[in-house]
Image (cartoon, rainbow, N blue to C red):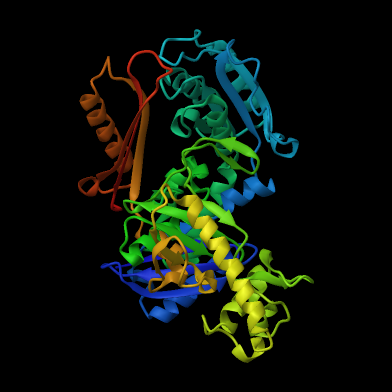
Length: 517
């Protein structure tokens, strides 16, 4: 049995085949195509040809894609939606999408704020306005809306009004309507949680297209025995059905795949991962084998959200970054890049643009293309450019640290050939075998997870009992997402006291993960 892992990047589409013992059988890089699927098919064909395996032996296929991120950033392919907030009269002063850019806020066909919601301690803020919800859903049905976002004040504490609204929506608008409820997507903070829910609702068409497209691409290629999964942004996998319901969770899955892949290849469970592509470098942290999550609100395409996201910093440094020497003798690297045209424009490939890759070849750090073409680059200029690159890497690594101690660093991505072996602030710099396709490997070896998060008053439910219940809930969520029950284990437990809440209230968060069924 083999696993097929695919990661679609801005420059290359990487594909790997991994056997039952999680050994890499074959890996390829194929230029990413504008329509995505041509690049995927090309990568799949090449990796199968290279490995020599039979297509029927591929039993699992995993895809990491940036299409949801691109849809939000580019304002393309987003579906018209209806937005219902349950929180009147307390939240009328700040309407939904209050700070959204006009070109993105157009996705809202209708917005309504009705009575309901709860206080932070779970007490009912106001009675649920069922009549208001019914009227709104009927209006949306008449306008042909197929997706609804529902949010409620403090739904992470008490979600009964959201569930009641979702039930009414299904009864009025039919089984085909797509419903996103905020308690399943975001955490504390009404506006940010609501924003994430709105984006999730607007992405249903995109999700349908890339899930069906990927499945059809594999089928057309004769891969019919494989179960299909999508990468999530916490370094785990989800089923096709789960991806269609929560497409927002695929945002930023590329960096997390690289982090997971780098951890697996290096055998390190705790380190900083530096993933260098053709245009950008992502810095992330691996903690206990999984990516560290961001603890602050994350902005996606100008929209502030608070659903789970990896703690990643991106800078404009890559293998295709353009190197320039100014009149005063100083040298700059990036942030602009030749990107996927590196094989045409870089000097080592016969072009006339000096890139970071040309500098690495000139200094003997990499063997690529025709090294004689970069012999004309002065050694002094190349050394200056490498110092700039080294400085950018060191700044990024320092930004990810939580102490001033030296740390292990894992290099991943095809562009990491431009980074030096000695970087200040590190105890070791590791470039493992198959580093160039760490993202696709991370996709292929990923597990399935479930995360439970809730505010719990320890005066009402003792801490030990609360944590035990939370662990069980997290395990059940992982099983529901596609994990094999007997392999599920708890990988993260967090409880944070909230001093501004009544009683001994804590935010309890537990994450579980297991192998694919």
